[in-house]
Amino acid sequence: MKTKLILLLLFFVFQLTTLTSNGVYVNPTFVQPDTGAVCLSGKPASYYFLQGFGKGIHNWLVFLPGGGWCATPGYCIKYANNTPFGIPVYFGTILNNNKTTNPDFFDWNKVVITYCDGSSFTGNSHTIYNGTNLYFKGARIFDVVMQELLQKGMGMAQNALLAGSSAGGVAATLHCDRFHNLLPNATRVKCLSDAGYFFPS
Ligand SMILES: *[C@@H]1O[C@H](CO)[C@@H](O)[C@H](O)[C@H]1NC(C)=O
Ligand SMILES: *[C@@H]1O[C@H](CO)[C@@H](O)[C@H](O)[C@H]1NC(C)=O
Ligand SMILES: *[C@@H]1O[C@H](CO)[C@@H](O)[C@H](O)[C@H]1NC(C)=O
Image (cartoon, rainbow, N blue to C red; front, side, top):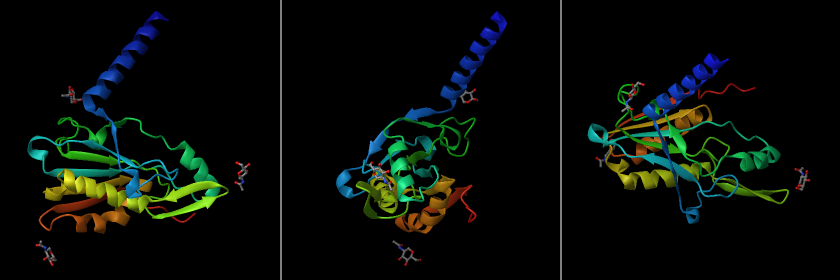
């Protein structure tokens, strides 16, 4: 019993050190609500920014997370209320700043745009359903965050990668050309869609 407990404890300590050695928690930056870039619920949109360093200072990785779609107004109301808001996000795997575990991107500028529109970063409309406001502003969120990033230095990027997973992978495909067109001709631009092809069900 005691051994099991100690092993369990060691396991957690190991997990903690692996976690902390491979990434960091990043706090959100909220966009001004007067830009119209708001979440499904009307709360301000946000993104998470981790500054690049060294040779990666002019390289940018923008990541669009997944989280499914809300397909009916009733479900969109639930979705709006259940979207996590304003919490720190852990930058691990492709987003971590550890050279050993992330040799290609560890020193890049890294951005995660909060996924809170319920429709893969599409739409720029507003509706009232059964007395509840629903803001479908995903495309606007993408555009407004891009403008902020261009001003933060992405406008001088040498390399830029728009990546996304699941619903964010769909968004990476949908926004790839727009992303490319925002950047100078000299920027090398790629897009990565991870698990971003949904078969009709
Ligand atoms: C990077 O990750 C490796 C492998 O997990 C770890 O041994 C090392 O301590 C980490 N480096 C830093 C600076 O956290
Ligand atoms: C409309 O809102 C009321 C009050 O919140 C709720 O009881 C009802 O189930 C809702 N109707 C629909 C169709 O969502
Ligand atoms: C960028 O490339 C486009 C298409 O090749 C060209 O029309 C445009 O003049 C270029 N812009 C700059 C600033 O070089």
